Image (cartoon, rainbow over all chains, first blue to last red):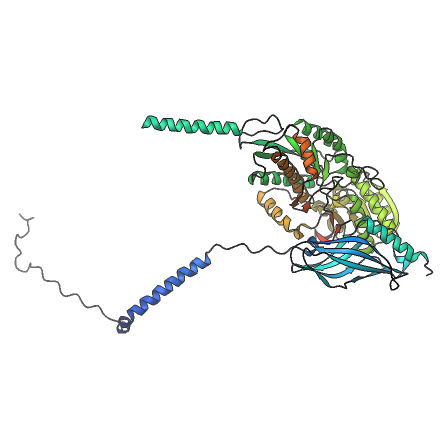
Amino acid sequence: MSRVGPVEPGEGTHVRDAPPAPRPRRGPRAPYLGRHRRAVTGALLAVAVLAGGGSLYLTRPRSEPPPAPPYPSQVTAVAYLYPQAADVNTAPRGFTFAVGVTAEFGPPVTVVAISQPYAGLSVTSSPRTPFRTKPGSPRKITLTLRVTECGKVPRNAGLPFLDVTLRNTRAMETHSFILGPSYARDLSRALQVACSNDSR
Amino acid sequence: MRQRSLIAITAALAAGALTLTACGSRDDDGGGSSDSGNGGTTVVIGVDAPLTGDLSALGLGIKNSVDLAAKTANKDKYVEGVTFKIEALDDQGQASVGQQNATKLVANDDVLGVVGPLNSSVGESMQKVFDTAKLVEVSPANTNPALTQGVKWQTEKVRPYKSYFRTATTDAIQGPFAAQYVFNDAKKKKVFVIDDKKTYGAGLAATFTEEFKKLGGEVVGTEHINPESKDFNAVATKVKNSGADVVYYGGEYPQAGPLSKQIKEAGAKIPLVGGDGIYSADFIKLSGAAGTGDLATSVGAPVEELPSAKEFVANYKAAGYKEAFEAYGGYSYDSAWAIIEAVKKVVEDNDGKLPDDARAKVVEAMQNVSFDGVTGKVSFDEFGDATNKQLTVYSVKDGNWATVKSGTFTG
């Protein structure tokens, strides 16, 4: 019996009605928020959309950066063409050769300077340096060489070369172009003629 | 239902097995062999180089680079139905061992091309063996002109062997190029010339000397050294007493390093200049601090200048090879790729399989191979020489080889 509770509530056992829930307290800005609830919600949504968009933008698949242009010496060919007849301005100690300069691909290449290594010889070009070569458009260049001191010029070098300073958007560099046996032969002949009557 | 599934599975397995069998059928006609692992035909690219001994730094760079080319071709399925493998043999830098290796490679029917060797003297001993078997050989490093242009190359060029090709520039250009640099740019006028009496070293020293004299330079002394020795004190004293302002050495780095050191120790504080045979990190180790200012010419343009080399360098690194690719890595990769291109042409011209006379056909195809390789455009002239002839002068600076000047032969 003792475990059985009152069948009917006795005195003082009535469950009281719950007191009315307290009204939520409103902060000092409550009236403002209440009035601008739509605007606030809109702003939050806009922020969320912007954040999502930004995230998508930042994580978008990106294309590889374009490869760097090639070094100018790797895309430029300088080839010996032929000797040209000497004129009154160059003879007797000067002579001219034609060479071809070609930029094979990539950005245009500027020929900044052309020189040759021998102490007793000078070289100028037409067109004068600097000049530009466009890819795929070979240019014929006339080189005029003048002997300044026969004693400082080798008469029969096997592999004479030109030092050509080249520049493109990648780099500026000086490269030796060894023009081969025809240039070596023609240069030797011209030097022998130029220095054959050397009185100095 | 269970029975129907069983039949379907059995049929599928049977079909798969038949397909595998068909792919793996032995191609007895055209060389190469079946490869049950991947399906298709296996073609072996032989490699001959010094894999042990003094010159192994260069040799292992050659082997690894060929391996990389074969793996790249397999990964890209570059030649349909063909899987490339390499068989690398160690010649120890010895001509007689190289010749034995050539015979061994010829005996393996799956070998359709060989990359190597490093040394011109070894190449000389292998050429006839390969040519008789019509087996193509592409050297990334032999520079002696006679190998492609005959012994009378200076007066009458005659190609001795149709099966021999090389991607490296010859000493007919390298020696004079070095002479021009030493005389005109470095302003050295008195040279002491030393060589190791071997095909490469003596040949290179000769082409250097000839051009140096033509330019007006003076040869104040010459000596030969014994490549088996590391004691060069007697020669170093002669250099000191000669009044030379530069030494030119025709030979390789195992001797060049100690020679440079001993010359400086003898009191001659002058640079030693050599060819591609000394262009190795090991030269700098051997010559020590005394090697600073020494010079080397080597074949090709500096790797960092070649956009085509960038991928090779990255892939080599990614492959995790222990040894550096050294001076001939790019040329070795290109040599192997030239063989791969030739095999591809032969297979494509024969309805997708190797013909009976695959080796002879590969030799023919090699003559017309042309592709953009690691070292630039790769193709061969009528002598089997590379058409791309570039050279670079390097100087030892701060314990490394630094680029000084590059040149291109356009004749």
